[in-house]
Length: 239
Image 1 (tube, rainbow, N blue to C red):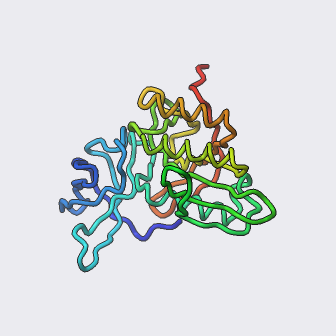
Image 2: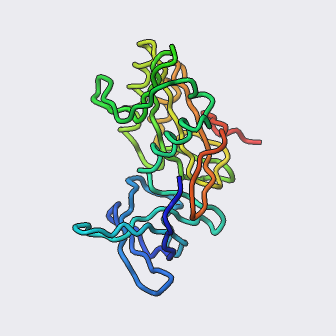
Protein backbone atom coordinates (compact mmCIF):
# COMPACT_ATOMS: atom_id res chain seq x y z
CA UNK A 1 0.00 0.00 0.00
CA UNK A 2 1.50 3.28 -1.11
CA UNK A 3 0.97 6.53 0.76
CA UNK A 4 0.43 9.84 -0.98
CA UNK A 5 3.12 12.39 -0.07
CA UNK A 6 3.01 12.69 3.73
CA UNK A 7 3.60 15.80 5.83
CA UNK A 8 6.21 15.50 8.59
CA UNK A 9 6.09 17.07 12.02
CA UNK A 10 6.51 16.51 15.76
CA UNK A 11 3.85 15.28 18.15
CA UNK A 12 2.84 17.85 20.75
CA UNK A 13 0.15 15.74 22.42
CA UNK A 14 -2.53 13.14 21.74
CA UNK A 15 -5.82 13.66 23.61
CA UNK A 16 -9.50 12.71 23.65
CA UNK A 17 -8.44 9.51 21.84
CA UNK A 18 -9.10 10.90 18.36
CA UNK A 19 -7.16 14.18 18.40
CA UNK A 20 -3.46 15.01 18.16
CA UNK A 21 -1.71 18.36 18.13
CA UNK A 22 1.24 18.37 15.73
CA UNK A 23 3.92 20.96 15.03
CA UNK A 24 4.76 20.72 11.34
CA UNK A 25 8.28 21.19 10.03
CA UNK A 26 7.27 24.55 8.59
CA UNK A 27 6.39 25.81 12.07
CA UNK A 28 2.60 25.58 11.86
CA UNK A 29 0.70 23.76 14.61
CA UNK A 30 -2.29 21.73 13.48
CA UNK A 31 -4.80 19.38 15.05
CA UNK A 32 -4.97 16.02 13.27
CA UNK A 33 -7.38 13.11 13.45
CA UNK A 34 -5.91 10.15 15.33
CA UNK A 35 -7.38 6.96 13.78
CA UNK A 36 -6.59 4.70 16.74
CA UNK A 37 -8.84 3.86 19.69
CA UNK A 38 -6.19 2.07 21.78
CA UNK A 39 -3.85 3.45 24.40
CA UNK A 40 -1.03 3.81 21.82
CA UNK A 41 1.45 3.00 24.56
CA UNK A 42 5.00 4.01 23.47
CA UNK A 43 3.55 5.37 20.19
CA UNK A 44 2.30 8.74 21.42
CA UNK A 45 5.28 10.24 23.23
CA UNK A 46 5.46 14.04 22.88
CA UNK A 47 8.31 15.12 20.63
CA UNK A 48 8.17 12.02 18.42
CA UNK A 49 8.50 12.45 14.66
CA UNK A 50 5.16 11.83 12.95
CA UNK A 51 3.81 11.79 9.41
CA UNK A 52 0.37 13.04 8.45
CA UNK A 53 -1.83 12.57 5.41
CA UNK A 54 -3.49 15.65 3.94
CA UNK A 55 -7.19 14.71 3.82
CA UNK A 56 -8.62 18.23 3.52
CA UNK A 57 -12.01 18.34 1.80
CA UNK A 58 -15.19 20.42 2.01
CA UNK A 59 -17.11 19.63 5.18
CA UNK A 60 -14.21 17.87 6.88
CA UNK A 61 -13.31 19.40 10.25
CA UNK A 62 -9.69 18.24 10.42
CA UNK A 63 -7.45 18.59 7.35
CA UNK A 64 -4.85 16.02 8.45
CA UNK A 65 -4.87 12.37 9.54
CA UNK A 66 -2.03 10.86 11.55
CA UNK A 67 -0.48 7.82 9.82
CA UNK A 68 3.05 7.06 11.08
CA UNK A 69 5.20 7.66 14.16
CA UNK A 70 8.89 7.14 14.87
CA UNK A 71 9.29 5.16 18.10
CA UNK A 72 12.41 5.48 20.26
CA UNK A 73 14.09 7.34 17.38
CA UNK A 74 14.63 3.90 15.78
CA UNK A 75 11.44 2.30 14.52
CA UNK A 76 8.46 3.24 12.40
CA UNK A 77 4.92 2.27 13.37
CA UNK A 78 1.65 2.76 11.48
CA UNK A 79 -0.92 3.86 14.04
CA UNK A 80 -3.84 4.02 11.58
CA UNK A 81 -5.75 0.87 12.52
CA UNK A 82 -8.15 1.51 9.66
CA UNK A 83 -5.47 0.37 7.20
CA UNK A 84 -4.97 -3.08 8.73
CA UNK A 85 -7.77 -4.88 6.88
CA UNK A 86 -6.68 -3.38 3.56
CA UNK A 87 -3.07 -4.42 4.15
CA UNK A 88 -4.04 -8.01 4.90
CA UNK A 89 -6.45 -8.11 1.93
CA UNK A 90 -3.71 -6.85 -0.40
CA UNK A 91 -1.28 -9.46 0.92
CA UNK A 92 -3.80 -12.28 0.45
CA UNK A 93 -4.61 -11.16 -3.09
CA UNK A 94 -0.88 -11.00 -3.87
CA UNK A 95 -0.43 -14.59 -2.59
CA UNK A 96 1.97 -13.26 0.06
CA UNK A 97 0.32 -15.27 2.85
CA UNK A 98 0.60 -18.99 2.01
CA UNK A 99 -1.57 -20.00 4.98
CA UNK A 100 -4.51 -18.11 3.45
CA UNK A 101 -3.96 -19.03 -0.20
CA UNK A 102 -6.23 -21.11 -2.41
CA UNK A 103 -9.52 -19.27 -1.94
CA UNK A 104 -11.40 -17.71 -4.83
CA UNK A 105 -13.48 -15.11 -3.00
CA UNK A 106 -12.56 -12.47 -0.41
CA UNK A 107 -15.42 -10.72 1.37
CA UNK A 108 -15.23 -7.99 4.00
CA UNK A 109 -17.27 -6.92 7.03
CA UNK A 110 -19.80 -9.76 6.87
CA UNK A 111 -22.11 -10.25 9.89
CA UNK A 112 -21.62 -13.52 11.76
CA UNK A 113 -21.82 -15.12 15.18
CA UNK A 114 -24.30 -15.10 18.03
CA UNK A 115 -22.88 -11.93 19.59
CA UNK A 116 -23.58 -9.71 16.60
CA UNK A 117 -20.06 -9.40 15.18
CA UNK A 118 -18.76 -8.56 11.72
CA UNK A 119 -15.82 -10.58 10.47
CA UNK A 120 -13.02 -8.52 8.98
CA UNK A 121 -12.31 -10.92 6.10
CA UNK A 122 -14.22 -13.98 4.90
CA UNK A 123 -12.45 -16.30 2.44
CA UNK A 124 -14.47 -18.76 0.38
CA UNK A 125 -14.09 -21.16 -2.52
CA UNK A 126 -11.48 -23.56 -3.74
CA UNK A 127 -13.34 -26.58 -2.31
CA UNK A 128 -12.27 -25.57 1.19
CA UNK A 129 -14.17 -24.70 4.36
CA UNK A 130 -14.98 -21.02 4.77
CA UNK A 131 -12.18 -19.13 6.52
CA UNK A 132 -13.09 -16.34 8.98
CA UNK A 133 -10.19 -13.93 9.55
CA UNK A 134 -10.19 -11.44 12.42
CA UNK A 135 -7.47 -8.79 11.95
CA UNK A 136 -5.76 -7.03 14.86
CA UNK A 137 -3.18 -4.25 14.53
CA UNK A 138 -0.08 -4.61 16.74
CA UNK A 139 2.05 -1.56 17.59
CA UNK A 140 3.01 -2.16 21.24
CA UNK A 141 6.71 -2.97 21.62
CA UNK A 142 7.30 -3.86 25.27
CA UNK A 143 10.79 -5.38 25.24
CA UNK A 144 13.45 -5.81 22.57
CA UNK A 145 11.67 -7.49 19.70
CA UNK A 146 8.56 -8.50 21.67
CA UNK A 147 5.23 -7.07 20.53
CA UNK A 148 2.10 -7.45 22.65
CA UNK A 149 -1.64 -7.24 21.99
CA UNK A 150 -3.87 -5.60 23.13
CA UNK A 151 -2.46 -2.28 24.34
CA UNK A 152 -5.59 -1.68 26.47
CA UNK A 153 -8.28 -3.87 28.02
CA UNK A 154 -10.43 -5.16 25.15
CA UNK A 155 -13.79 -6.77 25.82
CA UNK A 156 -14.50 -6.45 22.11
CA UNK A 157 -11.38 -8.49 21.39
CA UNK A 158 -12.58 -11.23 23.74
CA UNK A 159 -15.94 -11.28 21.97
CA UNK A 160 -14.20 -11.80 18.64
CA UNK A 161 -12.25 -14.74 20.07
CA UNK A 162 -15.47 -16.35 21.30
CA UNK A 163 -17.02 -15.91 17.86
CA UNK A 164 -13.98 -17.52 16.20
CA UNK A 165 -14.22 -20.51 18.56
CA UNK A 166 -17.84 -21.04 17.52
CA UNK A 167 -16.86 -20.79 13.86
CA UNK A 168 -14.32 -23.59 14.35
CA UNK A 169 -16.83 -25.72 16.21
CA UNK A 170 -19.13 -25.36 13.20
CA UNK A 171 -16.51 -26.77 10.82
CA UNK A 172 -15.02 -23.59 9.36
CA UNK A 173 -11.56 -22.12 9.84
CA UNK A 174 -11.14 -19.36 12.38
CA UNK A 175 -7.98 -17.24 12.09
CA UNK A 176 -6.74 -14.48 14.35
CA UNK A 177 -4.36 -12.39 12.22
CA UNK A 178 -1.91 -10.03 13.90
CA UNK A 179 -1.02 -7.25 11.48
CA UNK A 180 2.29 -6.12 13.01
CA UNK A 181 2.66 -2.50 11.93
CA UNK A 182 5.84 -1.74 13.88
CA UNK A 183 9.30 -2.24 12.41
CA UNK A 184 10.84 -3.11 15.79
CA UNK A 185 8.58 -6.07 16.57
CA UNK A 186 9.95 -9.53 15.76
CA UNK A 187 7.67 -11.76 17.87
CA UNK A 188 4.11 -11.45 19.18
CA UNK A 189 2.57 -12.43 22.52
CA UNK A 190 -0.72 -11.69 24.28
CA UNK A 191 -0.46 -8.73 26.68
CA UNK A 192 -0.97 -10.70 29.90
CA UNK A 193 0.10 -7.69 31.97
CA UNK A 194 -2.51 -5.42 30.35
CA UNK A 195 -5.52 -7.68 29.73
CA UNK A 196 -5.10 -11.13 31.35
CA UNK A 197 -8.71 -12.05 30.51
CA UNK A 198 -8.00 -11.54 26.80
CA UNK A 199 -4.84 -13.63 27.06
CA UNK A 200 -6.69 -16.42 28.85
CA UNK A 201 -9.44 -16.38 26.23
CA UNK A 202 -6.82 -16.54 23.48
CA UNK A 203 -5.29 -19.60 25.15
CA UNK A 204 -8.72 -21.26 25.13
CA UNK A 205 -9.20 -20.29 21.49
CA UNK A 206 -5.93 -21.98 20.53
CA UNK A 207 -7.01 -25.15 22.33
CA UNK A 208 -10.30 -24.99 20.42
CA UNK A 209 -8.58 -24.94 17.04
CA UNK A 210 -8.44 -21.22 16.28
CA UNK A 211 -5.32 -20.45 14.24
CA UNK A 212 -3.04 -17.51 14.95
CA UNK A 213 -0.93 -15.82 12.30
CA UNK A 214 1.39 -12.84 12.76
CA UNK A 215 2.94 -10.97 9.83
CA UNK A 216 5.34 -8.05 10.00
CA UNK A 217 5.32 -5.04 7.70
CA UNK A 218 8.03 -3.14 5.88
CA UNK A 219 7.30 0.52 6.59
CA UNK A 220 8.61 3.82 5.31
CA UNK A 221 7.06 7.21 4.56
CA UNK A 222 6.17 6.05 1.04
CA UNK A 223 4.51 2.69 1.62
CA UNK A 224 3.66 -0.14 4.01
CA UNK A 225 3.66 -3.78 2.89
CA UNK A 226 3.18 -7.03 4.81
CA UNK A 227 6.09 -9.27 3.94
CA UNK A 228 7.20 -11.78 6.59
CA UNK A 229 5.65 -14.21 9.04
CA UNK A 230 6.61 -13.64 12.68
CA UNK A 231 6.61 -16.13 15.56
CA UNK A 232 3.67 -16.10 17.97
CA UNK A 233 4.04 -17.34 21.54
CA UNK A 234 1.44 -17.57 24.28
CA UNK A 235 3.99 -16.37 26.81
CA UNK A 236 7.30 -14.63 26.50
CA UNK A 237 10.19 -17.06 26.34
CA UNK A 238 13.15 -15.88 28.39
CA UNK A 239 16.58 -16.77 27.01
